[in-house]
Length: 404
Ligand SMILES: Nc1nc2c(c(=O)[nH]1)N[C@H]1C(S)=C(S)[C@@H](COP(=O)(O)OP(=O)(O)OC[C@H]3O[C@@H](n4cnc5c(N)ncnc54)[C@H](O)[C@@H]3O)O[C@H]1N2
Ligand code: MOO
Image 1 (cartoon, rainbow, N blue to C red):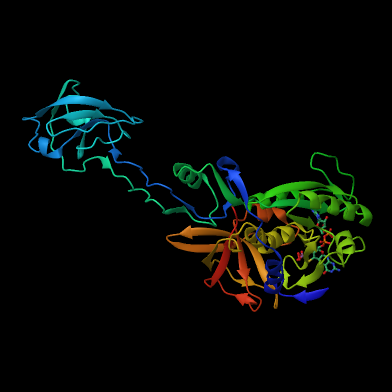
Image 2 (image 1 turned 60 degrees about the vertical axis):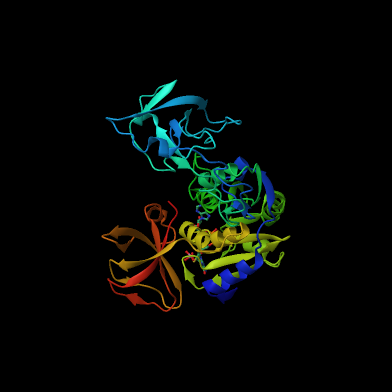
C-alpha cells in the first residue's frame, strides 16, 4: 500500500468522478436534485398589472380630496375578481370593485382598500386619498421576461420548485441524486434486533453511511452484509453495479488476514489501496469498477464516518454538478490545548458553540476511532493540518460543521 496525503487522495477521486447525465423530470420528482440548466421566465411576473388589495380601482385624481369628514362618492360600474379575463376599462369619475390578484382595469391608476370606504355596491364613499400606483402590483416587478429565475447548479428545494412552477415550467433537466449502494463487510456483524453470540457486534456503519449519503444529497441503498468469502463479496459487488452510481464499502481494507474487500478488489478495475496520512481513516481504497466509483472505507466506525465526509461527500457533490466543497467550515477558537500526531491530518470530534459572535470549539470526551458515542454527540470536526503538533487554547482552528 502506498502512502499519500488527504489532498492527493481527494485529487485522485475528484479527477475520476463526473456529473451524472441530466434527466428531464416533473417538478415534484425533481425535489432535492440539482438543476442542470438555467430556468428563465417566458413572460413577466406578474404577467399583468393587478390589485394588491380587495377594494376599488379608481383614478387617483378623482379621490385626491377624500377625507373621513369629506368622503368622495363614486358610482361602482363593475366587479373584477381574480381570473377575470375580459376586464373593461373605467373612465374618470367611475370605480369598479376589485379583488386581490384581479387585473387592473385600463384607466384606473390606484386601488383603495375596502377598509378606507363604506364598502358600497352601487356607489361607494371613499374616505382617504391615495397617490397613483397605490396597492397596484405592476407587471414584471417580480420577474422580467427572459430573466433567469433559478440558476443551473442550484439544489431544488421548496422555494425553487415554486419559482419554476410560477414561470409555467412542468418539467426540468436535473442531475439526479446519485444512487449509492452501501456495503458492510465482516463476519462479526449481525443485524440490529438479532441476538449476539460472543465475539459478534451489531452492524452500524451501513446504517450510518446510508444516512450520510442521504445527507449529502444522494439516494442510499443499504446492502445486507455478506459472508467474508472473496467469491461472494465480489459477486455481490458486481450485482450491485446495476443499481449504483457509486458504491461505498466499509471494513476489510487494512492488514488483517480476512481483509476481504482489499483482497477481492486489488487489481480489479482501477481500484487502488493506500495509507492516507490522516487520523482517523488511514486505510483507504478508491477506483472505478466497470466505470462506477467505489470507495472502500475502513471499518472502525468513526474512521468510516470521517472518511465519508472527507472523500465521499465531495465526490457525490461533483456527481450532482455541484462544487466539491467540504462540509461548511468556520474558524473557531480552541477552548483547550490540543496535541496532534506529526505528519497526519487530524480530525477531532468537537463541540462548536457560538458565544457573543465568536465560535468556540471544545473536544469531545473521547477520540478513539471505535468510540461512536462521542461522534453521536459532536456537532463538528476540528481539522488540524499535517504540520500541527501542539496548539494552545485560544488558537484559531478550522472546524467542519456536521450535518444537522
Ligand atoms: N496491523 C495493522 N492493523 C490495523 C491497521 C494497520 O495499519 N496495521 N490499521 C488500523 C486502522 S487505522 C483501521 S481504521 C482499521 C481498519 O480496518 P478494516 O477496514 O480492515 O476494518 P475491519 O478490520 O473490518 O474492522 C475494524 C473494526 O471496525 C469494526 N467494524 C467493521 N465494520 C463494522 C460495521 N459495519 N459496523 C460496526 N463496526 C464495524 C470491526 O468490528 C472492527 O472492530 O484497521 C486497524 N488495524
Ligand atoms: O484510521 Mo483508523 O481509521 O485511525 O482507526
